[in-house]
Amino acid sequence: MVTISVEMPDKNLETRILKLLEKSPEGAQASGLAAALDLTRHTVAKYLLALEAGNRIHYRLAGRTKLWKLASSAMRIRYLVGGDLDSIINIVLGISRSAGTDEHKKAVSYLRETALRHIERNEPLMNLAAELDGRLIGFIIGEVRAWEFGQTEKTGWINALGVDPKHRGKGAGKKLGEALLSNFRALGITRVRTLVNWYEGDLLSYFRMLGFNVFNMTPLEAKIGLPASAKQLGGSASGGKLPHGRKICNAWQAGTGDRA
Image (cartoon, rainbow, N blue to C red; front, side):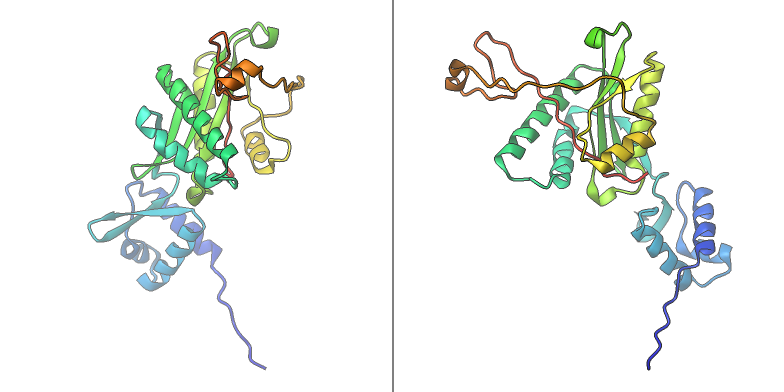
């Protein structure tokens, strides 16, 4: 019988590497980490690759040299701008399982309209992006509503969010959510709400991590269809122009699938 031995990763060594990187926000070379740990560069390189595969660390190139840093420290939160629209759409396309269908194309079109409308409102605190090495990897869009459903206090709402699937597990969703909640707090908002489909377990877990719970209101909807005149004008149930010039707004939400 042949016995195969599998080398298990040393969790203590992983922790020591992470602590060293925490002290080096600008990044550290593998050779420097090896010297600090009194190990060979080859050994440290294996652990760096394992930590990278787990989305816990990230490197940037300085010439031909890899500078390793914690994934969270390499990320920054900034305001969304109009030039981010294509990146937002690409993130949503990467998240959705129904990409390419007519229904999904409509949803993406509505999201573009919604994101642009929020950005053009010039309320930067409500529209945030997570950026890693100059690339947008996540976004979150919110707003403040007054006199919501007869409530006398102003309420914050999270309307849309998404994290690039290739960058999940790096804490982008957590950073975005916490930053937006902090901005709501700075505006004097003490209650923030959102809507989530009951079957979206990852998204429910994400919001619970941010402190959200079920609240004492029941969402209701009525499917009322469109009048014949609106259909003849090429209108649709979401976003189509009505005979009197009014427009139905559509809020579209993309899940993060992000692990905190």
